[in-house]
Image 1 (tube, rainbow, N blue to C red):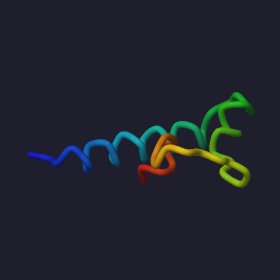
Image 2: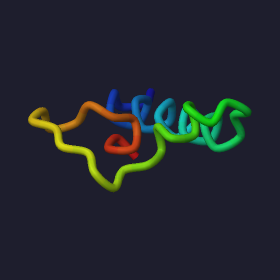
Image 3: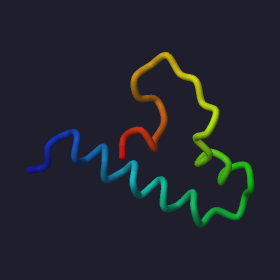
Image 4: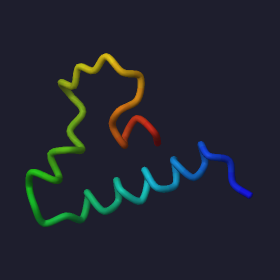
Length: 49
């Protein structure tokens, strides 16, 4: 049985792979992490990987 963290990481990695292959430019821009300011610890899929 997988731990919750492992399952979350697996789904986050799959989501990131789908974004890399997406045809919509705005969806691909979600992967840009240069100027992101957040107050929560982990809110974006790339932070879970």
